[in-house]
Amino acid sequence: MADDDRPTTDEVSGDPVRGTDVGDAEVRDALPEDLDISEFVGPYVFPNNNRRRVPGYLYLAIGAACIAGWAVARGGDAVLVNSGFLAAGLGLLLIGAFHLVAGWNLDVDERDALVAATERVGFPVGHASAQLGWRGLRSRPTWRILVYSAENPPTRRGLVLVDGVDGEIVSWFTEENPEDWSDLDGELARAGDRGVETDTAG
Image (cartoon, rainbow, N blue to C red; front, side, top):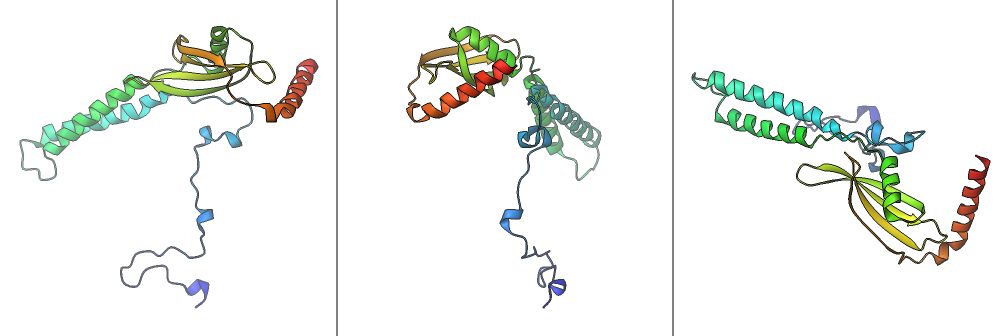
């Protein structure tokens, strides 16, 4: 049977049949454009946490519609509208309210958080990384800043939690760097030389 004559539905159930010429490697998940940093050129900007309010408003609107439908139909002989509409509406209102409460505005970006972390640890910072997390029942955004001292290799490291709303230091600690970077000494030296050349040229 030629490929063009291959049946597209199951002869017994009538359900569509997936083509056999599509391999697993061709089926992939894709990140949203604003989260896919591999396709982005320029400084990366973390999405603002206040986007949670958008689904919150949708939940509130749908919940209010469910309760309104239940209130209108409860005195009649409606079959499809019952007390489940009331329960669903109340649940959606609670979920929507939580989204609004948890939709903090991210006023402190990763650069501001890195500056605050550098001031707190008390030593010159070389390598550093930032991760955005959340804490508490209200999901308050919090930056987790991992910093290493500027020596080559680093002799100290620290972790600083910086509030993403007001920039306050939530928690922090520093310690002697327990990691063994001896096998990377050459690569670190070359990276440091390139960094010095870049800074001098600038």
